[in-house]
Length: 382
Image: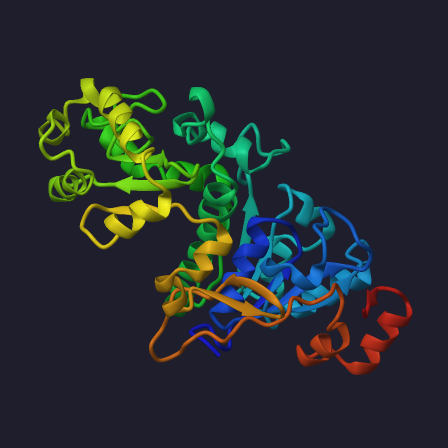
């Protein structure tokens, strides 16, 4: 059920952005078949039955070092619309499941490749993680951290925003194009590219002289007093985003500062440090929730900074069901929302190989062949 109902996706198991992309496609209704290893390997984070990134799909366990398992995967490719893999460049080819081999089986296949550095370039074979890709892309250098050091934007900006979500966009774009051409294609999604792409507005501001540079001195990086977080009397924080003049005016009124110099000199950049100090002083006089109660209902663009547990209980988040509970785990609900073909509720993440027999036979493999492969250890069932 969902906008991608009928779309069949093979996900060669990985970590981070690849599973995120597969999760989003599954949330949208695609039939996602995850190809896990017959033996555990790679990064394991706790209980797989609670791994939200792996929700809403089935798992087949294949030993891809076996030619028979590779042949099984290529047979599945013949039935698929999309394949997702997150190996270093060249690994899929060495395994015998690279784009050219898959195209021979299925010219309509969209082959999605998720890496940090991309499929080519001098660093394509280097190891890395979200943070290092973003550092090279020029993102981390503009994120303010403690004491003016470069900040760490979790792995949301790289792994998920600049990686997995970019892969989803590429795959969906290729599927739309295929409807006209009848041909699949390779989607090369790299975190370093996606990280840089998300800097588009900053590049535009820089070109217009609106982003002088340096960390913590610009409009959207904590340099502006009206776009900042402030510690309150209870050591919790509020976030302020009062950029437009009418919102800034509402902020000044709400803080009782409308009669001070700060109220009429919003864009005097030379005084931003002074104004930040003044707001720091004012916000420190009351608790977070006291400020939120007074300011959130106004046009001052102020919000309490909430932890994950608090966010789920916020009246707006709760009313929209933005955070839901499934298989005993609180988690984000599928998004975006569709009025005619809504996404189904998330289903339990599979254990590796949990659905091997039913999924392989359901995708068209002969039951006797599956049983022989299982007996030989080429495939396994949890």
